[in-house]
Length: 61
Image 1 (spheres, rainbow, N blue to C red):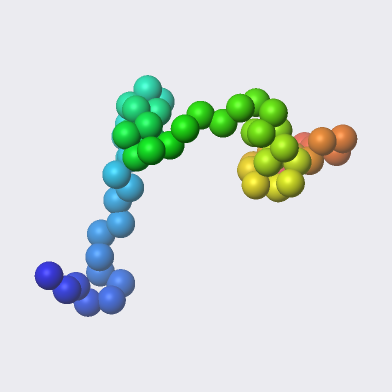
Image 2: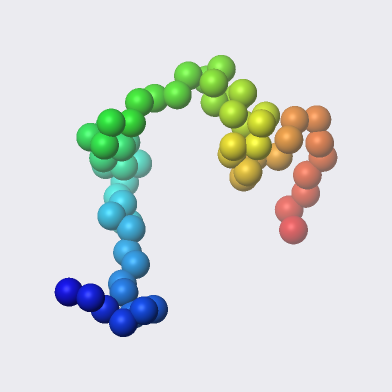
């Protein structure tokens, strides 16, 4: 069924899942855990924008 543009419901499949349920869902999709070293490397390169760059001062807005 085709809906008019802008009227499709957008609800995430993971909406309302607990952390354990989400982890299992990711695993079922083929996701694999990321090592701490790789996670830190990605964070430094800006892949995780919610983390402040190392060595910077941050404050709550």
